Image 1: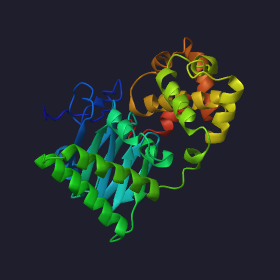
Image 2: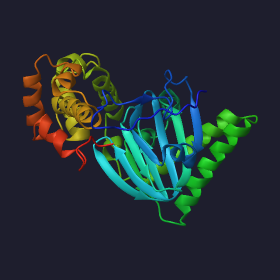
Image 3: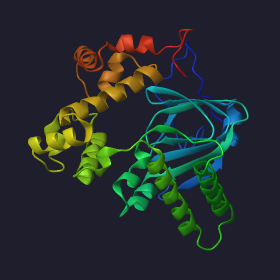
Image 4: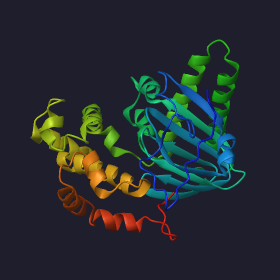
Length: 310
């Protein structure tokens, strides 16, 4: 596998045209092979980049970072979260993320193909199955049992993948499932996961994810399930406290905000990329949903030197 380093630093004079998509950070490659699992020490890649991992995303890959010692600041889509070890950081597939690490921070980075995670979640409790779908930072008590369990899981996965002994695939799968259980237990209660219709809610979320760039209306997405508008709204209110149309709008706004924060694309270019034929209408839509214009949002997320947030 090519391990060449690719610079992703931002310059105010050289705006990034799109959020970088990587296989692993700094590696431009095709989508992960089915069942892909990879683990490496936290320092092995971060130190090469002076402990700065610029915002990027992965297609079809999910990551879980175990921060045994050290700390830093995480960028998870629109949020900045400071953390110290021991911590667990969950990065869902296609979430924009970046890190500023304290030099010398250590732990592991586990990367999993989304199809592999989906396979492991079949037949298990819903709240456990969807624990890796939410970007979050979980702080563990130092020296506590949870930290010892987490260290054991990541160490075991690294050992299995390194030596490839008989039963490796089964052993790794078991450890990843234990990791998912730990995330579910450490995270705040996800009441939506235990509500009726959780599987249908996930199907709707998947449909929104697949079509939000071109299908802004409920009807197009609901037809794929299929469900009536009333039933779909009831489902969304139960799980998200929002109507189906509001859920779709929330996803469009999130993607627009990613573009405004992490790229040098113009507002018009972002609008066209999200399926809007009229940038002026997009601006009104964004202002109504986000409470400020795209330009105001972008200015608020620039750094003090005037460059884009990195």
